[in-house]
Each structure stands twice: as C-alpha cells, then as structure tokens.
Length: 109
Length: 114
Image (cartoon, rainbow over the protein chains, first blue to last red):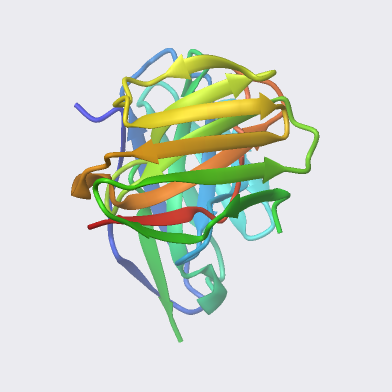
C-alpha cells in the first residue's frame, strides 16, 4: 500500500473554475500535511501546509484536512493558466516527510 | 531563486564513469537532503544530513556516496551507475529536522546513465 496516494491526472480545469485535488495517506499518526507545486522542469515549492482538521485558506488556495478519513485536499479557486503544474501532497509521519507522486493540473483558457 | 543551487543541471554519464553532483544552500539551514525523482513516482528520500552528520541513509545502493563537508554544501558522488538510476536528483534544505515539512529545493540535476 502506498503511503501517500494521489490521482496522477492530468486534471483538466477550465480557466476560472475550481480545481480540486485529493490526497489520502495511510499512517493515522501523521501530524502535518503539505502541498507543493512543481512547474515542469522546475523544483517543488511549498504553497500550503495544514496541521488541524478543517479548512485553511490562503488567497485562491484552500487546504482541507480530515484526519478521521485520512484525507487532505487542495482547492484552487478561479484557476489560471499559471496554475498549470504538478501538485505534490506531502505528509509528515513521525518526523519523516512522505510524498505522493503528484497530480498534474492543466488549466485551459 | 530558492537559495539552493545545484550543479550541474544536466549530466550524461556512462556506466563506468565517476561524477559528482553538487548542492549549495545560502539560507543558513542546518539540514540538507538528497531526493530522487523519477517520472510518475513519489519523491524518494535518499540521504539526510543534519549539522554535517548523516542521520539517514534510506537503503541507497553504495554506488551513490554522499558527502557533507559543511552545513552549506552537499555532494552526491556517483560511480558505476545503472541505466535505472537515470532520474532528476533534487537537493533540499530545511531549518531543523523532524517536524518540519518546509523544504527548499534546488532546481535539480537531470542525470542520464547510458
């Protein structure tokens, strides 16, 4: 069983729509959760983190965490072509950061 | 510019060559990491250094040899690699270990083994 699972995509989203990315994790003891964005040919960069159940909003991004369901998601509102990238979910489990394989998002004009 | 610089950006080597990847961070961080990124696979943690001491070796084959001479520099020495070692090798740094998930990545070194 993969420790952090994401749908690889590509997730095609019309410009201006909401992109919804999902991530599930296997370790119930995981404490902190992160979303990284990776443009093609570039390095991953941290865009959001969340520690508590519920929603956390930062600009057009909202991270949602449900520890009971072992589920974390990222919503991108008013999607722009510049949001086209691969989004990596990362879970800190007992001090170790486990990454998912990423979801590719393509925002179409 | 993330404050983490990797060289070379691209490297092609034969299976019998010896080469090295270099990473330098200008962020004052005390932990540095090597990750391997292959297409459609999760980032694989290879090595972790904290204050120049190796604290993790994630069952990496001995043909990969890390070196951390100081807290700002990290090397990955490569020898007798296999074609399946072709991947993007990412260096990262962080302030502290353990509970942090905030890693700062370099642009990566794209390695091709012929």
